[in-house]
Every structure is written in C-alpha cells, then in structure tokens.
Image 1 (tube, rainbow, N blue to C red):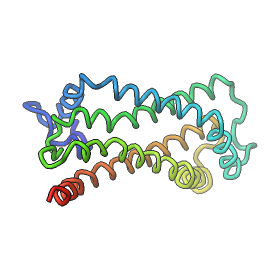
Image 2 (image 1 turned 90 degrees about the horizontal axis):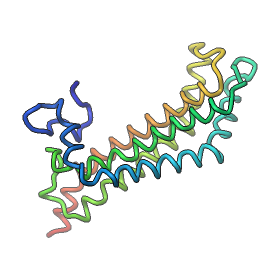
Image 3 (image 1 turned 120 degrees about the horizontal axis):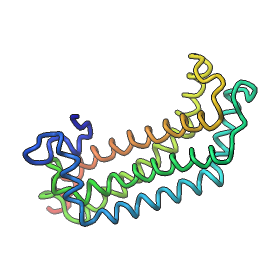
Length: 202
C-alpha cells in the first residue's frame, strides 16, 4: 500500500514507499517511549474531557438535530465507556504521530534537517499538536453537528441508531478534522521552516 502521508512518501531504503512507515518507526525506536507517553497523556486528557463535559455537550447537540424518539437512547454504561475509550485511544494515537515522525526524521527524505536548527525542528511536534486540537475543536463544534444533520435529515441514515453510535460518528468526524489540520500544519512546517531558519541565520 502506498503511503499518503507527504512526510513519509519516498522515505525508507530498498523497499520503496511500502517500507516508509516501518523505516520511520525503526529510526525512532530509541525514543518511542516519548511518543507513547504523549499518547498516554492524550488518552487520559480525552477521557477526562469526555467524562466531564464533551459527551454531555455532544448529546445536547445530537438531540437538537435528531429526535430522541427516533434513536435508541437506552445504552449501558459499558457501551458508553467502551466508545469513549476507543475515541480516547484514537486521539492519543493521532497526538503521538508527529512525535514518531520527529524522532524518526532521519528516515524521512523530505525532512530538511540540514537547513534547520534544533530549536526550529523542536517546533514540529507542538505545532502539529496544536493544529490537531484546533481541528478536533472545529470538527466537534461545527463539522460534526453538520454531518449529523446531513446524515439523518438529508440522507435518512441512522434511524434507530443509539446515542453511542451517533457519538462515534461525531468523534470520528472530529478526529478526521484534527488529522487534516495536523497534516496541513506538517506540510506548512516543511515548506516554511527552512526559509525562516535561513533568514534567521543571516
């Protein structure tokens, strides 16, 4: 399978594009614990956000778009916890991805390390993380509810779905928006950072 991530395309050696993700992970092997720590922090933070306010807010938005009488509202606490755990794991993995790329940057052909200082390189992870969180917020607050209205109102999809299933749809949309924002930030960093570093070095 050819990778679609512009950071990974063309990297690796001897195995073509198919070996690119494996090569990056191998190059980051000594620092993977740092990426796992970021993932764990993301999982815990996401679970806390879901438990404290995000899940209740989403249900409120959902009930505004879909009548409770047209969905299976009754769910078990286990269903809710399982769904929230899956969302948290997905968010943690997405947050850890830039760290894996950063620590494995030696295997990324498009990483302009020879033109960047360490301080400039170190901005990559926080920049991508902030972009991911911004994308998630936009997806959660705007794109997700719009997707629910389109799916249920315009397409008639999801009649009889439970609130947990709708929650997974909304969370999936939010995470996808976060990944799109993260990829855009990564591409912008690779395009702009060398020029900024070059101007600063003059």
